[in-house]
Length: 223
Image (tube, rainbow, N blue to C red; front, side):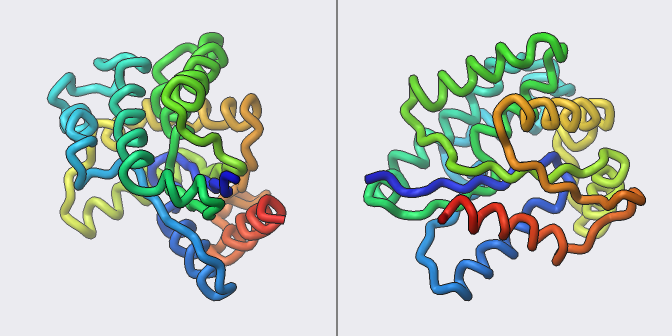
């Protein structure tokens, strides 16, 4: 009997990696067995086209590679991961936690399309990865909703602190704005659990507050 697949999703700079680490630690304290994933798998050969794309080898702007072609790059990496790494564990009933998944294609590639075309893209994407490639569909997607102005500020601070160069997604503020709009649309259409990263006053919520919202949703999904 298949296991459970829980996905944390969010735009670049949403604090997703921090929250993923928080969730993993919480499950460990609970004594729950699970397998963790993070996509893309930059260190693996299956991510070669992703690395070329993000480096600008196919064009300096995200839109230089259309949503369907770029989605295929990421889907191939997930397929390889499923076949080589975690598929058998999942099929035996194991719990999988994923930092990004098919859902990231919905957010980052759907953002390249007009809003009126995105629902068709979402349907194509889910059919492609879940029906055609045979990847598991998540039992829960927690989407961290971070205003773009704050996420960009966090991204630029991270780049300065680590002396790293942003990829073509992270460099393009207009594109990041569309990603958030697309993510909110996807969350509504696809039934994701939205976790706000800011309060009613627009101030950033604490890591602990956001973490508690995620844990509540995960606990319910796990029964």
